[in-house]
Amino acid sequence: MTDAYVALEGERVVEARARSPGTARGELVFTTAYTGYEESLTDPSYEEQILTFSYPLIGNYGVREERFESDRVHPRAVVARELTDDVAEWLQTEGRPAVDHIDTRELVTEIRDEGAMKCGIAAGEDATEEDALAELRQCKHMSDHADIGNQVSVSEPVVYNEGGDGPDVALIDCGAKGSIQESLVERDAVVHVLPYDTTPEAVQDLDPDLLFISNGPGDPENFEAAAELVDEYVGDLPLAGICLGQQVVANALGGDTEKMEFGHRGVNQPVRDLRTDQVVMTTQNHGYTVADPGETLEVTQINVNDDTPEGLENDDLNIITRQYHPEANPGPNDSLAFFDDVLALVE
Ligand SMILES: NC(=O)CC[C@H](N)C(=O)O
Figure (cartoon, rainbow, N blue to C red):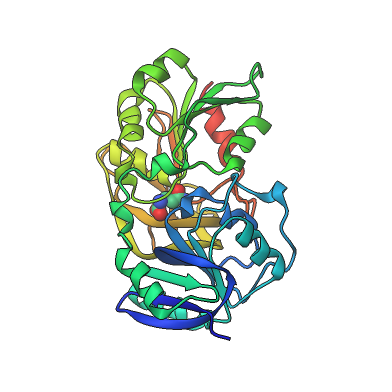
């Protein structure tokens, strides 16, 4: 039954089945992850995007809150070949449109050929093609969401493991996945989650042992306050970053980022460490990449598929960043030692 429409760039409309009603617009991206739908759907990095899964059946092991990475669903809408009732009901409760019974192989091939694209969705009994097209026409480019950090960050500082024995980490929340803070707390760190627009003065008052820039949605160039912190504290504090965090650190230290064709999203992205020659499997979710690391940062890890920078370091200045998600969730645990390496920078 056609009660949903997906409008793609070029105004092509594909018919689908509504699983959660409503209208939405966003950048259409795909993940090849075959598990981890709860973690992906609650990852704040997907804010203002529409997520489609290349794996055909999504929801086959239910929905459990303990696997969530934040307190809500972030993609504006979900597109799948087949969604289970569990996931459909969850998305209905969250008020996020979802559609299935669509040929996601064709859709993913189209995104691979033409790049991540604008998309409009209309789902539900009264939905029309025109509604989906109207959403598409209002869809902005990711880079034009200038204050996207405001949509995903804490508004006030939150402390985890207060009074703990480990170092004080200032985690700049540009849309942090919960498991980053958990990975640090598991290693005894005291984690101060700070708003994305925290000022250098506020960091100075806190007097942390380490500055950590989180993952987050959209264009890293729109996170100027975080870049200012990096610029201010480089050399004085050890610096770490994950995903958007790596991009912000590179931009702040004379490097440059650019948008990729369709990005990397999945749980089996191979990464080679150029120092040890070891390859690990990683979880990824990004649409921008570091195009130029600048003079300060050395590229220490690369993506085996396309040679893009996956790790940047400066041993003298105590900087380590990763483009992938060492905290996994979902995905392989191959790179959890990143958190030990980061905390070791404090000694
Ligand atoms: N997961 C992330 O931090 C994503 C970073 C950035 N928004 C990108 O798409 O490249």
